[in-house]
Image 1 (cartoon, each protein chain N blue to C red):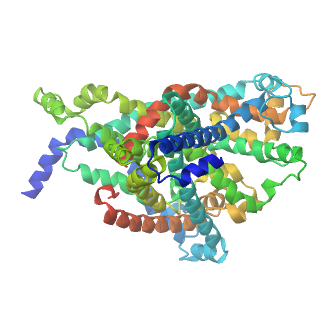
Image 2 (tube, rainbow over the protein chains, first blue to last red):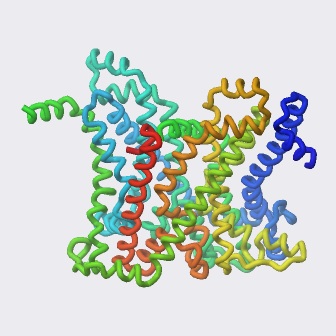
Image 3 (tube, helix red, strand yellow):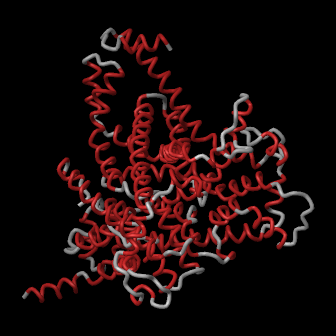
Length: 310
Length: 306
């Protein structure tokens, strides 16, 4: 370490030998810092997985640990002994994610396409109409009352899908991508007599696959991870998505116990609540972690498009 | 004459307008109509009357909100937390992005970036579960370690003073990957000739970073920071709610406008005051964004929001 500091002090020196030393010292610092940061990001995940695979008694005595001291799959076995609720939550989440992503993607791209057409005189006015909603809002209360009291969407599937359908940021990212498609393509299609919707569906959509993939994944992630709309609008157990089910379970082990009893479990021993919570966390996050290596680059792409034209 | 062009345009843009219709209806219904609903803040809400039939009560809701002292507490917390998040997150992200740019081969970069980006992908519910895992008094990892070292365990969930640091840490943890990717993109787009010139002039790596990389990042940093400042009165509900929930012991240091509005609405069912707090936040936020946008415009017209 002292050698490193020495090199920093000599940083004005122009001799290449010193520069190489600097470079080396810097590399060491860089590798170490980045590795530490990356580990700090990863370790909590390892902790969760490890806890879910540890014998409950061991957790109670020794606490959560990074390596299962006393390996046990008891929590998972118990979780899937009466899987109705989990399976239902999974189905809700999958349906919400699929419907939301599909319609969200269709509507976002269609909106963005109309706004990206340079020959559309009113496009800036419409853009501002959408954009203004990010600057000012009526707040949570009127929005909540509208959905619950006026649209009667409480405890409906729609309440989980509709609120996240549109997002101004996605429209902007999509629009800036579509603006990059040469106008000549649209012009020539028009001359061939194609209508605007046909141009969008047959010509523009196939050309914008990268942007569609990115926005689609952003949407899918938002739907998969959504618990907020369920917190506000869902009290029916049959309509609980996965994240909200997890939220309920973390806060209410008593309810969990009852649910299991209700499902016909004869529980003689104590339920391993701590490892069960962690097993549920793993089950709720699993698909994201599995898909993560394959989809990550699309997110990076999206951020980069978004960053160019925030 | 002008009328005629309008009808002509309407006819020309028929299909495009039709394509915009779903989005227009959505925003009219879920954004503009609720704006009209702001009137609730000036009413004594009753369910029979609804939004427009309930009796007016002037500024009573606002008076309650301000006189209870809640307004000051939650506004201060929201702003201070956001300032801390902006400072810490951006500094850390720039640090990580510069190192990622300078150090390591393709694989090393890929692995590190993947690891750092991972927390962005999980829900706040899961983050709350992980936090509990680490921090709870009896079996949390932190306290296990402390006991192992022969130290006194700390009762984190009953001690408000720890939470500002913890929440800053959690925010940094979850946002690190996202911001690093953004800044890395900005660094990658710096003209390589500048680095070559610096090389020829005999600059060492520290000089290169201080004299080339960082100055070239200024525009990105300033824009990102200003935009974040525009949202300084918006609390991240998901984070605060899942980290603290309804643990009232911690509210003195952790309650933000958004959690307060939510609790007033759902838990205490005080619709009038909840709406008032929401309006207060919206107006404050709007003024802030306008000021920030004015600042951005002066700095770089092309980067302004509008």
